[in-house]
Image 1 (spheres, helix red, strand yellow):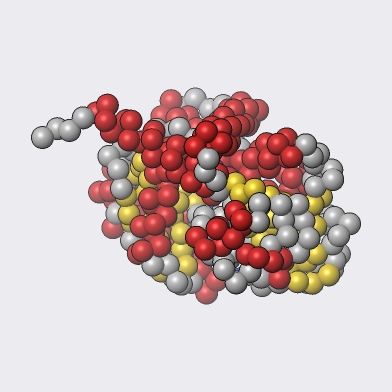
Image 2: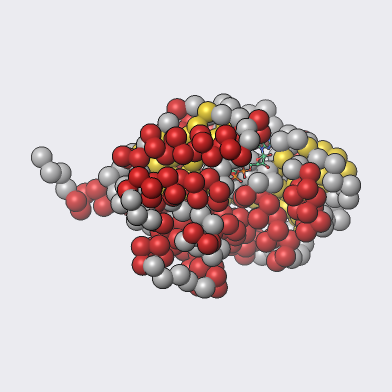
Length: 357
Ligand code: NAD
């Protein structure tokens, strides 16, 4: 399935999973429109999904599924139409297969047909880390508002895939104290701070955080309710819901994942004064550097990593300030402010274009 919902070039991740549904993909495609609006980049929203269980598939099977899916949606994708990127259970290799399949069909290499590709095939420096780096940038901005420093800030990360592992690594390197990490199989807590490089090495070898010896074992649900200043869900949707929202102890929630908080939970968090950085702002670093990758591919001119990271920071800081100021001006929470801002921007463009009747 593949879903797109505006008339510009479109952008969105492709996810694989046994329980992917069309409604989920539709919802995520709409979110992508607003996400691009929040960071003010010139894309509409899209998303793709394939129902399969990657944990049970061989590399050859994954490649064949990816190539067949690409061939089926060939007429709907392309650098001027819809540009897929990685999401849950897809990665640089998946993007390489899509780019190659697309290029074979159109008879020339089109690197700008996907983003999140390997560097050697026209990927952008900094793309792998971009979503996690964006999460860290908004954490830094939130800390500024609370007058806190990184060293005294405890962070818990749920999910240790692309977003969670990179956020944990970058934030650890920057001085944050990562006190818990969990994935679908299990997790680990250490109030003194986890050694993130060792943990990520362990995950590389064991394919899970579960069993990492330097801390106390926990699981993906329990970890959300532990003591910390920043909670960073970076796995799946609806993990913070009406059942556990009252027990969330973090003062700042940074939504690395898409839709980790249900609407009833959102109300509970708002009443309890939790500062929420909503998904369409918090994890927009990925689509921002995907935009940079698309620009670089189209120009055939590749930027140094420092430039990518500086430009990402500029965009994320501006978007954070725009959302928070919008919220203060209209007396609404950050999530509503982010939607209002994005819808305003899209509506303004639609009005400028007018109606071709
Ligand atoms: P990934 O497949 O690389 O990693 C997913 C992680 O979540 C894994 O550690 C997995 O074990 C864990 N997980 C899966 N199901 C879980 C469950 N039921 N409970 C707890 N943990 C579970 O995926 P990713 O690319 O890191 O994406 C994570 C989230 O971030 C998704 O919501 C995705 O839409 C969103 N996102 C990703 C990007 C990106 O650039 N990859 C950009 C924006 C948003």
